[in-house]
Image (cartoon, rainbow, N blue to C red; front, side):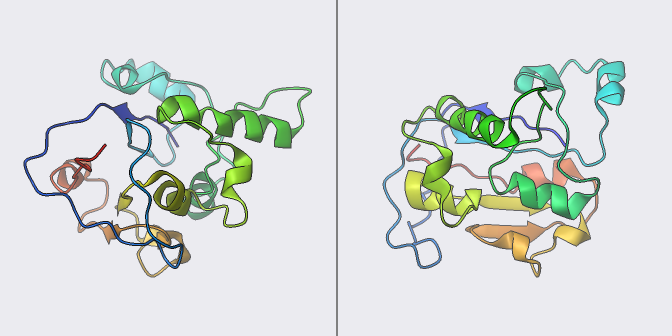
Length: 183
């Protein structure tokens, strides 16, 4: 799995989507933070293979780090990602809970927002709902693997969640992406 993500406000000529309340969480707040967040996962991609490919594009998306997935297959790996926990760097002599809290705090920088900490996720522990309910984000998912289909529980907290027609077709996803003009 990989993590990449920030872009500054693109100009979008389309009118913004109406703000709706995230599933029972009350009215959505005005957008906070100035960065959009884009998560791209490359399922089953090994670090050594990525580095051997010497991609000129991937490093432009953000810092490339060697990280380890929480699970060895797709569905549980993505469930962990959607709790806000990025794949970990497996530091030695550090309690996992301390590492998670510190890594989660980095969302303040990633999103150019303030006051984000792991405690703010309690009790839901679901990152898409946190982004909606606390930071006013619109959340959308485009997936190409059937085990992540909209009928599974992983779709919780998204304004839209779509299983694409074709597996492994990133290009088909790009034309469906939109960005919140308020951010």
